[in-house]
Image (cartoon, rainbow, N blue to C red; front, side, top):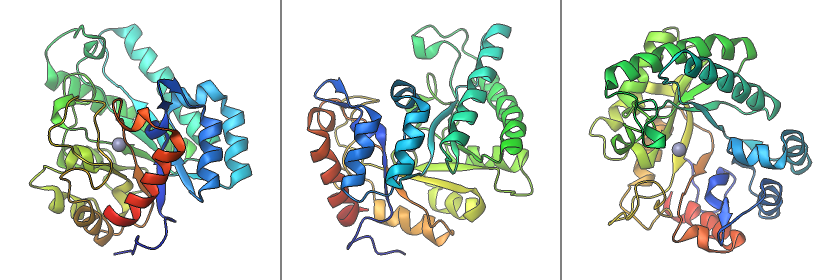
Length: 292
Ligand code: ZN
């Protein structure tokens, strides 16, 4: 297992971690400058942040600083209630793929969607099995487009508390079953993003990480699970402040062959988004050395 204690060369910052400091959006270009100033070598930006800063501007700034991506957030949201919705999903995912290519991302991360309409508070139906079938169809379709662009797809299983509104793929086993069905040759075109926040509780985690292996382990996300947790979405903890055994899980992932970045992804409305962005980044660096 790699030693992270003396430097942060394998730290990546998911830019949602510093997206909204003191209640105001922090421009992605400024985030990149702040990361470069701290020797952070990789980031994973969100599409809305890229759109706000301008795709070409972001690509140029990444090049200027020599910062690479550890992933691109995100594609997916494959479920739909009608034909227009289906077309919208496809158009949007093609745009996400093209942006990922422009930014030379190593993979496009997929949050697959839950019941259609649920994110807006109006689920069109209650058929989660049907939603999962749409996800399977959607990924099968997108995989063809992604192969043509040589852009790997990383399915991110989300904690079951998000099954209704964000992702009906909730365990690593479920994600890997899809990978096996759609990419049986383990070509590297389809894999998983292992986010410790979503999968730490899973009794099959170690076994499924080993099953995934190097070809399927495309991204590794870290933060911590706070006890108690006060918000389902925006109360993620800094590494070391909660109960996830991060070094243990990183050991499993690396034993399976993963040698990429560990990406810090923290949504924290009441704490880390209330600080100066530079301070949050500094603490990420320190905790990456000490608690990951
Ligand atoms: Zn994640």
